[in-house]
Image (cartoon, rainbow, N blue to C red; front, side, top):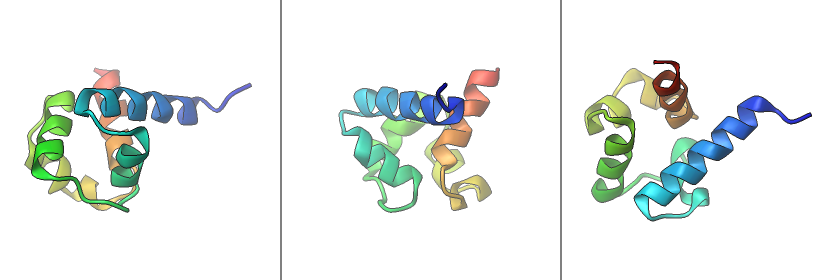
Length: 78
């Protein structure tokens, strides 16, 4: 029996990395606040979520680890 939260985040990292043309590890590091994306990658991430760069990277939510995962879950609940 797998952990559904882990599986969902793994799918997020895979899809987002493919969309942005980077590795899953790099996306995971951005999500865990270990790396800061370039503007090009930040724009790609924003396009993926159909949100603005400011909404993703400069909001209260972006101060948390796993902020990309929270955007992913919000997007999939709509």
